Image (cartoon, one colour):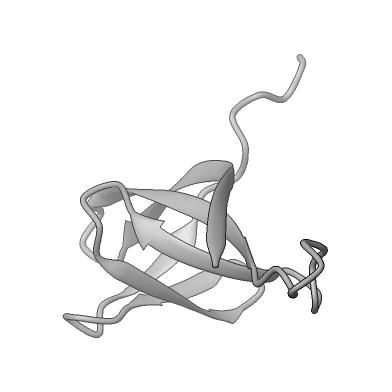
Length: 78
């Protein structure tokens, strides 16, 4: 299985701590070298801790159970 970094974003917990989250797409190549299924998106903190997506912009840290909310993109033109 190969994981490719496809994005990263910041998320905040209820106490205001900011987390850097990396978004990966995983795919399992078949015997002929082509992808055998649709890519699966996974999330991890920059420090390696796993993150599960709950709904929309809401995520939970697997180890601690802390809920974090994705921050809006800062790259909005004024």
